[in-house]
Length: 499
Image 1 (spheres, rainbow, N blue to C red):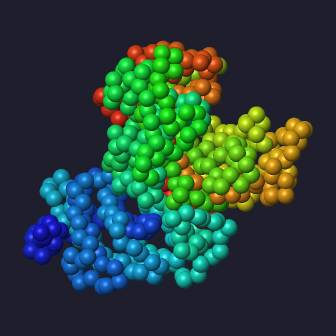
Image 2: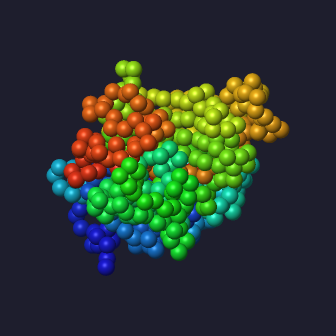
């Protein structure tokens, strides 16, 4: 079928205009592991964006090309053409032209661009913000590949890694199972949280170009009586059905009157086998959820536990928040108005130096109102955390490394990082995790906090999950599951660059 773009151009109808409207700046971005994206920012009056292109073959004027698509709506303030199937290599040239229809109030007029080119660089030219890197007059990188201290492993490891290179990305146009593994466990994240992490499109899906993690009720699937009488066995036969964490009765649980089954279903995805890295820059755009006792997190864990079990091999929490809109402690808002970043490290679970590497920031409007930017710059000297491009915390260990930073010199315990670099344990490869947890008893939701409907469980209660579920008439309405998607944890994109 002939696209509306080519039909209009070919017929040369009177709608092609040389009026004052100018096509917004065009951006081209190479996707990993394959594909590319071409987009323009949304402007008032734009009603259509069309893309036509070829790889390594010049276009003729108004030619459809190998890629030809009309985009009829903007996604998150951009008009975007996306191809996820074409492998591109350094030196490939994209020949393309775009067409925009604009309504200036007197009618719709069409505006075709001239034929343009974009050369795939060896060294990424998209360091600062790939979604707005102009390709109208693209800067073509040389063939030089500058060395980097970044290392990568996993099935998605690039063939070559150069300084500044985009080494992993997901724009969440689809839910890519070749990048992300869903966890399948009742373990409660090691904190006796109240959710079952599962692989189900009711709990994790892509919508409007963003990953959504959505909480649901176990009782809606099995009935309320199942929580106190049922058994869940996650030991599946196929690889995708296998339980991913047996700790804390994570693979088989039975409910009873005191210890009910996990009442909430949610999702946690990770790149444990596909992508792990050491040193680099992570950029993530996310919208935190609203709803009492929801706990969104974007974090990293060590691929190999090079120094021992948690927290000896470290943990990097880029983003954590609480979904409560009116949660306060000692007069300070600690709910959805606050986000935090933390490093966990220490010789054993009883010696964790996280208080020396923990950062919080509050916003009057909260971080649930719209998407916000979160960034980690991780080098052989420091880890730096940014929210909306504002530096909120730097961890630069002294000469004695994280052993000295944690104040463990007089602990009577041997230093597990002795002989390693001063960045140990954060000198090894880590993988990415995104999840939405609920509640828990580790103190992330402290006892004694102020909340309009109180806190339905105590962190020391042996029946915490039951107490939480029994208080659902107070917290469940704050999730608004039947009226909107505000309880969803949404991620626009994840991008990782080499140093």
